[in-house]
Image (cartoon, rainbow, N blue to C red; front, side):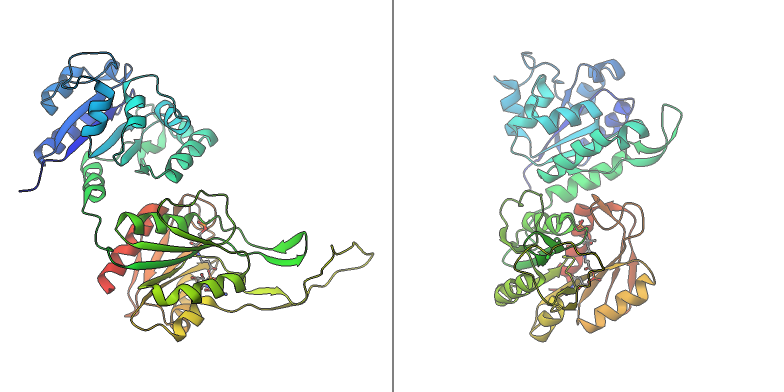
Length: 396
Ligand code: PMT
């Protein structure tokens, strides 16, 4: 019999706190043990008694309270958790988490737990899209916290936009995914190219592009979570390396190609998420190029196409490419898929808001060789990574 899993639900002070009552109720019905931590402000929206009744356990509100089942509350509950979900998560708890503050029970438990953490933001749209909240969410994502994107619609404050707490059923579905035995890529090695390349013009200048490496790093994190060994060949990026991945830092397309081909024999899956420069300066000046009076012409020559090289010794590997397009997205993507003998191609229209370079979300259509084209809604790069890996697993 499967052991009962324990979900710790953190409820913070937002109007959507009432929806967490349904979340707790659903989790209990699904057979989870549930402990609820409420912040002081959450208690102003919903009475702790509601959660006590629905969870069947004392509600924890205060670090120094003695009502809970553990001698040291924050350590006991943190260790008991198989997953910590914070729903609704206000801008305040998100900021505290991003900066490591521990000034109440919930923020202390966040620091004390080794369990996966799911944050479900819910707030006014303007607050949600503010630069500082987005920056804090980015920080959390980079540290491996899963963020469930808020839904769009009418908000309690009267405006319409993003910021609604997703339906409790959707939150439960995400919890189930996060707790699913992460073993469907166990024993497999996934080789990922990621980020931009840099093509030198002279010792101080180079040609590059807008790739941040977020898509490739999200793929690496999700593949690791699913049990894979991950070889990550990355161009320059400011992102912290995903813990557990074997990272090979490169700069130019030729370096990236050489490293990828060297690692290829170890791999079962190859995913090309990198934005590789198709051209490089034919001559790299040894000295800084001086400003002259007239125009400067830089002659470019072709770089190797890494995925086309991989295709030449593809074997039984599953290969996945991306296509960053600005027009005729599907037609161009199909051509790339055929040329590079890919099993899957993820086409992103990089002109769409929330898609492509630099952002935390993406909007993609996944093409299969049988001609199927599945258009996915805007989702976090982590979620898209999982969608891609689901299809990879089916092909392995
Ligand atoms: O890094 P982010 O900021 O998160 O942005 C993500 C992304 C937009 C970079 C990513 O989603 C993406 O679309 N990556 C591929 C970008 C690209 O270069 O597309 P392309 O259409 O030029 O190339 C098609 C495929 O061939 C890609 O898988 C690419 O990695 C590969 N390629 C391209 C050129 C080349 N010389 N060698 C290659 O292997």
